[in-house]
Length: 337
Ligand SMILES: N[C@@H](CCC(=O)N[C@@H](CS)C(=O)NCC(=O)O)C(=O)O
Image (cartoon, rainbow, N blue to C red; front, side, top):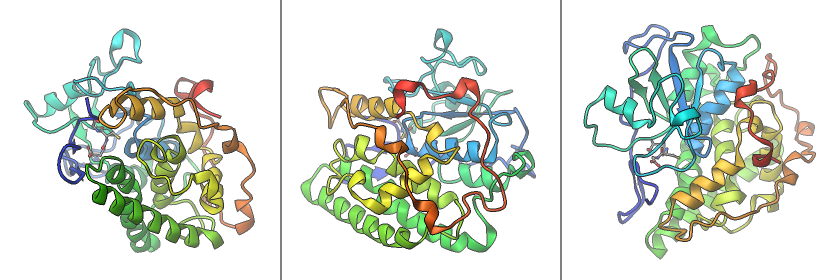
């Protein structure tokens, strides 16, 4: 398969489809889905940058118990995301083998692709939302009653306009830009995406030269969104997606910025480099027909001193870092530095 789902790789220009199931889980339950501890299950692939946003937010906000996690196999088959990492190949709570079963329960014969992140209602087994742009914002603003003590405000009201602006640029040129370059089917299309990506990364480099975080002096949703692309940069986007003006390790500012985040509890402890590499290199057979997964890059640099604290900033604002990763969710040693 080429990577399938509702991303259209075969067309003239790469197009990312909008999320189809856009119900929201809110405090007032206006869409029929009230925030409730233990009621829902967050389904992710640790390979997926969009799903990884939710993994980071959930950790920073301390929602691990309130919103339990299902991790899909990083390599989909022709029925898309599957629970082959679990005993008997079934998610132990939902009892399903494929995420598509939750989509089917919600809407029979749903014609679109099956994507992560997805939130499933445990009692009914129905998909609630796969709205990757909204899920994390709602975790930050609607799930507040269930946040841990000391949880940071990832979407502070007075800074929302600026955060939205930065996130829109990061989305277009960086988060989605790497995919546009990687899945381009023509030289010009690829080059356009490549130049937009690196122009934006230049601007972000300037911005982050004198300040520790993207907006304000604390970690916000904007940093989470930039992190999930940067952390994959050298491992997959530089080679596999041909985003190779430089390696991240050659950009002093961004490399220090992403290492700072990586070493902040809640970021790096969600990252599985093995899942990341196997997903991209084995699933996208259109651009990597042999399916060979590169051995590198060497990950040891991720844990080196970043010196970003010298810029000031208060990572968690008035809050505190999250506690340790729940035992069952630890990323295995072979998949991290
Ligand atoms: N819902 C969006 C964003 C989320 C997304 O792209 N997730 C990818 C994984 S990184 C996915 O699940 N794609 C479907 C597939 O590969 O089968 C979309 O499908 O375009």
